[in-house]
Length: 233
Picture 1 (tube, helix red, strand yellow):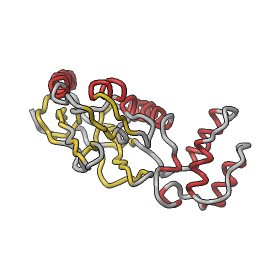
Picture 2 (cartoon, rainbow, N blue to C red):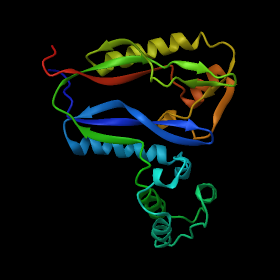
Picture 3 (cartoon, rainbow, N blue to C red):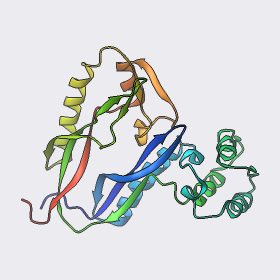
């Protein structure tokens, strides 16, 4: 059966909306593991990387999008950690986070994130054991009269492989080939990507295209894991 899916790590579909970010329907399957603990460890590592780059109070346009806690309860939750939360709406909370003192401890930052229980970038789901394939997907960058941003549909499948190693090799080949076509200056929207490919949310990179790709990790292709059925051969 080859690589069988059991516990699947998924990336949620966060998108820019003005100076904020909203979570839209849809997700991208990144990897599968034989045990929940292995999948959860992978999810936690990805989540921690993004949290180090993101202002959580910009992830949503209204308070209920961030947490199930009423704002007054959340304010007490934060104060119980020894921090001094702001008074006001999301803009004040976002400014408070941007001005985060160096004296905050890791435990205090964790408590804020823990209370914002709807701001999550990855998840783990259990799936029936099934054969999987690895699709090489072209990211459909679209020009919006100001800069480039990834299309809403997630990309266009180019090829599929039964092993991640072969898919990754093809992704690298296609990516290197495609970069040579970007021979002018471009503004590239880089806000939706996770791990090392996700710069600080709210920043766009305006530089020579090769430097943009190398420094910001802007992908032209990615590998997506998909189910192909229990009896696939």
